[in-house]
Image (cartoon, rainbow, N blue to C red; front, side):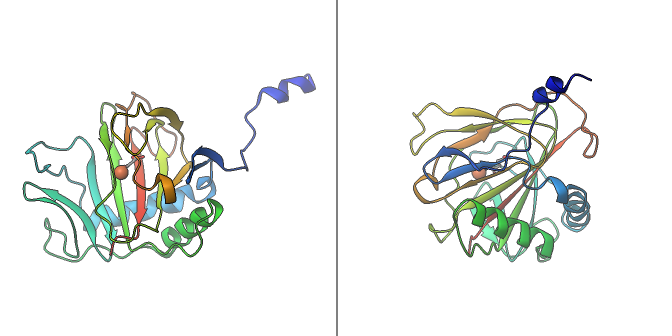
Length: 217
Ligand code: SIN
Ligand code: FE2
């Protein structure tokens, strides 16, 4: 093989890629933990099954969700909240696995946020066609803690806008193992996921799993 051919191969990106002030994309950051992360997701959803929540406006969400941690993010016709009890099972959510905690803390630190200790992990499951419309994460109590968002499985187009809905979002393809961290001046930026394209991922199959870590309580 001609040595120049190697120049075309993707190089793991070690430098955090800046999306905006306070927001970075860490390419492949979770890549080496992928199998254990997905195993933990299977254990979580065996206890707290994935479900399509109903928005306060009465719509069934396209994304299937579960949670682990001291509380879980819940939507129903009454509104959004963090609840220590899973309303589907009547039991507490599964605890945050140590490997989740450690990864989220390390990713936050790489993005410039020291001492991030999440208490909630929202598990989002996308299949081809699933989308998540532009929204802000603003149900959490502590505005100084960032959001740490881990992508596994099929690629997705992440929409990342600004502090107002009217700011046209940028589009970034998130791949298996990528982590996005947003906080500080970007903490309340609008974001979402474009409809997932058809595909098959070698480890995750025909889906995308997103883990979103928050300090919510
Ligand atoms: C979210 O905003 O909760 C999820 C974002 C994603 O799936 O990447
Ligand atoms: Fe979000």
